[in-house]
Amino acid sequence: MRTEFLPAVALAAAAALAAPTSPAPAPNPADVSRLALQNALLQKQLELAKGKEFYLLLDAKAQTLTLMFRAALLQRYRVAALEVGVPRVVYRARTDASRWEGRIWEKGNLDPARELDRVEMQAPPPTREGTEIEVKVPQTPEEKYPVPPRYHIRFSGGLSIEVRPPNTDTKRGFWARIAAGLATWLADAKAASGSEPADTLRLHVVMSKTDAESLYRALPPDTKLLALP
Amino acid sequence: MDDVFPPHRRVAIVMKAPGRPFRFVAAAVIATVAVLGLVAARGTGYTYGPAPQQAALAMPDVPTDPGAARKQQTKLLAQYKQYTSALDKLAPSGTYVVVDQTQNRLYIMNDDKIVRTAVCSAGSGMILKASGSSKKWVFDTPRGVFKVRNKIPNPIWKKPDWAFAEEGKTIPKNPADRFESGTLGKYALYLEDGYMIHGTLYTRLLGRSVTHGCIRLGPDDLQAVWDAVPVGSSVFIF
Image 1 (cartoon, rainbow over the protein chains, first blue to last red):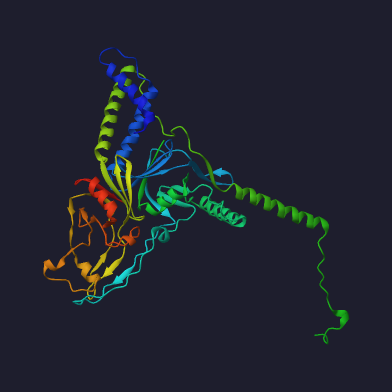
Image 2 (image 1 turned 90 degrees about the vertical axis):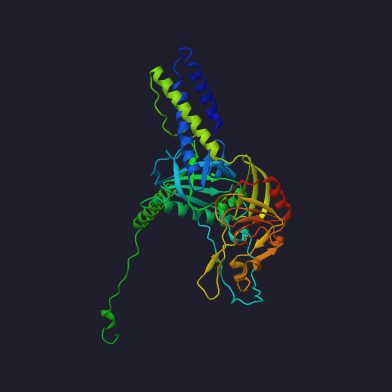
């Protein structure tokens, strides 16, 4: 439960308890509003918890991104920094940066996608003694799923979470950094200036390299998202 | 050609070099276009700013009449209790297990806290096609939530058809020929649909996706799971 709402709930509860015995003063409208807002968020969380999909809770204040399923915490990632990005063309913003919190975003998928490389094997013809099949030792998850330095979780409706570890470029050489910066800018400029921007809103999330890699390798398909204000 | 036209009839086309003012204008135009292009390019892309500290959500209206405001507050408090209680009921309480099947990690959780992290092995994702028939098996670990239905020490494995097909053996007609002991390690926790958390003979492969869908653990971690996880606990696989 969000702790910052507790005083509002406690105050509201105290006022409500006092109401039948004495003519209590009118409740503070701000407290009532906050309680209504908290209820709206709880209702959304309940909706997600009753669903069949995995979901992410992005808590900007607690600086966490939590992978959940049926109200159970599966993984928690520490968010070092969170920024909100909007597409712009020649300094003119194309979308509105508000109204992304408190809303359920659906069908979140990785870009670039984490491809599952399925191996198909033909069983040998059956005999009484059996046949020894040589099976290769599979790769470790780290070898199997290399994580790009920057990736997105794209949700239907235009929101995208851009995940980057902090200071990813420090180990690279000068020209490599210039090339990477240019490539990023070109991709962003292209995404922003299309007839429909690729992402109407981006949440730029900075997390540790370990967490960023872990999230990329673990995120189930079609994950939902609720950003808590 | 030289024979046809005498030298004095030849026409020389000479391009006159542009004068200084023209060169200056051309350079100025190119420079302006370049600067404008750079400015436009710099202003194109994504602008990032800090996430708003205050909720950008519309705050609901509160009636000005004190009586109506109190009534709304009472209603909201009842709703709040209803939602939190419903969420608490849905969330697993006490010990539960979380399996990250891609990264081959198993977590024993207690009320949202990780009690133990274990290296496991989950489904390989391989497809096995039966010899001489169109039958095939997909070795995936399913995602979702499962209950621990049963816990068995020294489990005996009833080998399914794919185990024989994979070894190139004839599928036995006598069910007694399917039983094998020792393969599943010291303990097995039975989940739904034939999936289990069990031990392995191939501990060197832990951390890699090699199983036919079950979750394999090393002996120490299997013991920890056996001790900590009671029947009826939830196992979340993602």
